[in-house]
Every structure is written in C-alpha cells, then in structure tokens.
Image (cartoon, rainbow, N blue to C red; front, side, top):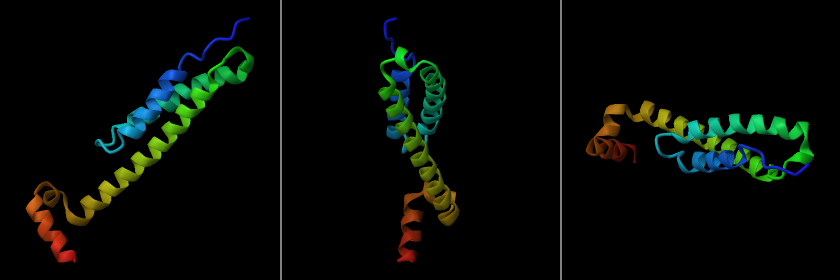
Length: 107
C-alpha cells in the first residue's frame, strides 16, 4: 500500500500560522486556532489508527502546536484588552486626546 498524506495536515499548518499572525487583529486568530485544532484532532485519530499509511504527520503536529500557541496569545490579548477597557474606560480609548490626558495623570 502506498503511503498517502493526511488530508488536513496542510490546512492545519496554515490555520496555525494564521492564528499567530492574526492574534493582534481584533483576535480573529482565535477562530483560526480553534479550526486548526479541530482539523488536527480528526487527522491525529486517523494517524493513530494506521501510522504507517501516512507521511506528513510532522506538518500536522507543527500546525497543531502553532494553533495552541496562537490560542494562548489570543487569550492574552483579549485579557489585556479587557484590563485596558476596565482601567481607563471604553470612551477614553476612542478619543486619543482624552487617553493622553489620562496617561499623563498616571505618571
């Protein structure tokens, strides 16, 4: 039997990279990380059932790791955004001059 590639390994790798790149763009990387982990789970199950039949498990595991790192970074960015909004207020964040005035009081 000829070795074949895992069907979602490339997609998982791309989702992992996108989750890292998009973590600072309104946390859209969170979505890519979740999709990458879901796809990785199904392919890992296929690989565990018959490891000799597939060749690109390394790409799958790298994509899975990148998705996990991307999710963690996205959660940190969300936490920082929540702390910033609760500390200075949402209205001040929308007006740069009010934000600058607030920050000068903190010094």
